[in-house]
Length: 122
Image: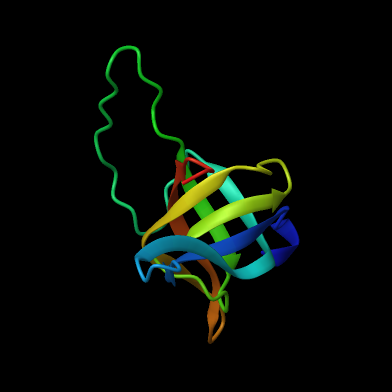
């Protein structure tokens, strides 16, 4: 599966940061860079259940998909991935729920995460 990983991402996790005045703020800090993956847009993971999608007139539907990563990747629900290379470079996605694990012979083969696009500035 990893030979199909055609993109690289930075994994971002929300962390507390303190200003000079002692006020706490939340920032997205990189915890890993150059991580290989593959994004399939409009694709559901093995674990996601089909749901009815309602789109209001004049609005753009949320861009969702499945992120395929190696089974040993240090990522968890709530993290964000920013694409740094490949066809989706510059886009940022929020990692949803828990992953679906594709089992191989005796071990996890890869993980499939449901993702949703978010603003690259937030």
